[in-house]
Structures are given as structure tokens and as C-alpha cells.
Image (cartoon, rainbow, N blue to C red; front, side, top):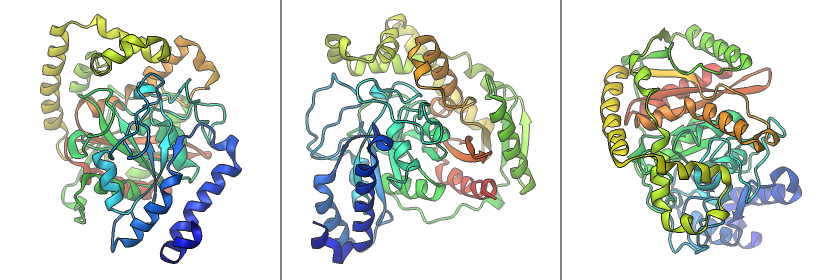
Length: 429
């Protein structure tokens, strides 16, 4: 195969075979990252890519969370109870990636049904955290984050319902981006929560996230946001985002904040009253009710096949009345409007996650699992609820990363990516 296509794609062919060699030569290190590789299609993909005159993803390797339909492969969703049907077509956003020249590497492992921020999967194993051996990688897009952290893929496509690209990005020292919900199609993507799900992505830097976002969105935006004309403020909420924070993370966040201020940005710490209202919202009801509805007929018959930590969350749907659920939706609409009015052209900034990655073995205790999961999701879920966009940028202190999370209002994705690119440079100095 390599000889047949080397003349047209030599650089990309060598890159692909280098990755395959790394996977086969390091089975323990790569264990549980992928549920399947798309190896049998590499020749076809490479030849199709060679025919493209241009494409913003040409030369890039893309891993795909096992929630996305990829033609000719199973979409398992990290489960054992879903029917093992082969997809007849690509998810719409995956088709867009092909059109822009991205080479699809394989389906990556994940929390079952994307229902946790820790990345644990008892069915297909849990990928080890490359930076914290023995710790969880974060989830639910666990395999995707590790595939980027280990240089197996340039971009990892995932979903983000409450932090599922940004939490694993923070835990593994990479960048994770959650766009505004409807900016990328979810056709052909298994659902967890129709209200909160977004297609997101992870990469080593903001620029790669930007390329992947524009490719999946189907609209290439070369226009640069003029940040100097907007004079944005970076707002640190004094009443949200710092509960249960580890000392090392607080110290690292303060050092990152100092760098940002020294580089000319206005950073203010104020009370944000709408966040006090947000903290009272039973946000868990969205995923519980909507997941139970989505998979009702299947999961009701096959409960014994579901991860107990996931099943416990699905079954909480029975606690929610129809009136409560409808009120939840109505309150959300009002809070989004108020939040966008408050934030305007400014940004919220806070730690992505306030704890270090918990040890996998400890999470076998359901109480420890639940507490770590709750804390991990606390800051990130805000952007999903407010239908905003959000990014986690790594900042390393003593060779260990934390995530610096920046949130913007609905549909300000390009604006957020522009300022994040600038802040990324500051934090790397």
C-alpha cells in the first residue's frame, strides 16, 4: 500500500505509518485509547486527499470520538447495549472533515454515552493519563484527549455536554474547544442531552482547534477579529469557579493571571449575580431526562449491560416531573438572555477544573467517583447551559498543567478563538 501511494502523499503517508508503528510498538502506552482504527480505509483516504487541490486540514490526522458515525464502522458510544450496526454514511461534520483533507485515524474510547467528566469506561478500559500515570484522563472524550497528548492525532473530534472536551484537555495538558451549540451539525452523532450537547474538539494549540472548527462548520473564516477595537475585559467571578480548588491549581492560575495582566489585558474580579441564580439550577435534570428518553427502549431492556455509574444517573430521570423539566427549559432561555447582556464583548476566565486528575483506582468507590465527577464538571457546564462558547488553554507550572478556561457569549466563537490565540502565546512565554 505504501509504495502505491507514496509518490502523491509521501509526507502524509510517512506520518500515518509512523503513527501506526507507534501504536503497534507501544501497546501498553496506547492501551484503551482507540476502540477501532480505520486502517482498512487509509489507502482510499490517502488517494482521495491527494486529489484535493486545497483543504485546510490537508496533512492532518484526525481521531474521532466513538459517538460519530463513520461510514463502514460501528458507532458504539462506549456501550455494550447499543446494536452493533455498521454506519452507512458519515456524520455531517465528519463528511466536512473529509472534504477539507483530514485523514480519519480511528474511533476513540470514551465514557459510556458520554455521561461523565472522568473518562472511565469499564467495557473497553480507561486510557491512562500520560501526565499523571494511574490517574483518569478526563472525559467523556478520554481517548481523544490522550490521542492528541501522545501525538497520535493532530485534532481529536469529540462532544461537549458539560465539559467533555475541556476537562480532558485540562487533565492532559492540551487545548479543548466547545463551540456554540448549533454552529456545528450534530446529524449522525449519538446524543446524550439534546439541550446541552455540542460538537467540540481538542488539539495541541488554538490554531489547530480553529482549523478543525472551521472545517466542521463548513464555513472557512479568514477574517481576523480586531481585538484592539473591542477592548475586552477578562472577568474573574468572585462568586463562582473557585470552590474545592487544589492549592497547586490556585497558585498556577494566579501566575497565569499575572502574565495576562503584564501583557496589557484588563482583568477584573467582581461578583456576577447571575451566577448565583445559575448555581441554584438543577442542571443534572437535562442529561438525565434526555438520555433516558433517547435510549428508553434499549436501556430499559438491557440495564445489566450499562456501567452502574452511568445507569445511576439515567435512572434519576424518574425523580423529575414534566412540570419541573419544562420550567427548567424556560428558566434557561431567560438566563441565557441575561448572561449575554451582562457579558457582552467581554470574557469570563477561571480554572477549567479545580482539582488534579483523580486516581483511577480510587474512583472505584462510588462516593469518590461522584464527588470527583461533580467537581470536574462544575466550571465547564456553565458554557453549555448558557449556550456560549468556551476554550481550555493549558498552562504549565512545574511541568504540570492546569486548564485556563475562557468563556464568551453565544456565537462569538471566532472572537473567542482570536483572543485565546493571543493569550496562549502569553502563557507559553
